[in-house]
Amino acid sequence: MRNFVLACLALPLALFFGGCAGGEIIGVSAANPDEAVLTVSYRAKGLAHVPEKCHIVARWGPFNAVANAIVTGSQPVSESIDLTRWQRIRGAPASDAVMEIWFTYPNPRRPIDKKTFPPPFSSIDVIEDAVNAKSPVNRGSRPASSLDTTPSGWGRPEQLSGSLDSPSSRDLSKALICQISAGAGPRYFKVNSPPNTLVRLTIDVHSKASAGNVNEATWWRVSLLDEAGMALPQEEQEFVGLGQEKRHEAEWMFDGSPVIFKLASGSKDGDWIRIRFETVQ
Image 1: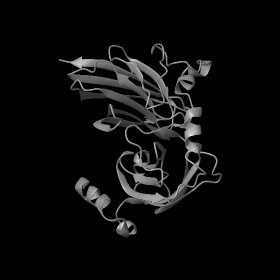
Image 2: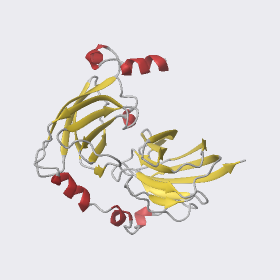
Image 3: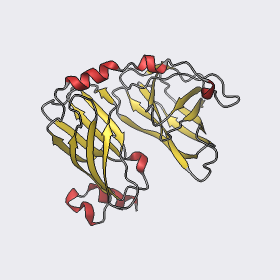
């Protein structure tokens, strides 16, 4: 069955509405060419069971923006989504003569459709100014309020960077405790002195959403990237009931290479996450 699904995703998009899962980029626009808000129109089918792994990615010059695609509801889905969270790309920039738009699955670096469009903004300075106006350090240093109290017995939280270009730094000698949410976007930290051994991760997630929504759930994800920001095979993802707690254990092999942790949540209200690291002898 898994091979069949992968084969379907690899078929040309001309067969998109013939039965296989897929996504197709339709067009782009900007309501105000002087504001860094890009609207992307797309169609999707057969991906409603994996909404958290479907993304729309825009690349223009040295910048990109990523947003979760809406793929649930009656099939096929026709939607438009706004991309507003622009970041500077690591490495060589793409051409600023055209804008590349991707529909990706299962992660933002694996396009199943890719198209180019004339940029709808007045100039690339619109994006440059928006990126320069953001300060991950300032956003991350917001003082905690009474609503930000960690679950009982967890300990003190950390503020992790929201920028892949400038991740926080820490080692794995002590537990990580922080908040994650869909609105704030992923959190990143690079590992000082990466281990060269098997490490057991004990991941506790505490949903900050209303406990009354007992029949609803949202997702969280912990994944590993290389020093260039490319996804590695190590990834853990599960659902947690709103207002509930979840424990997940995994074992990841490290080889001493530089790595970056990426933590994300699909919850609007957010989650507390604690990760404890233990070397496996």
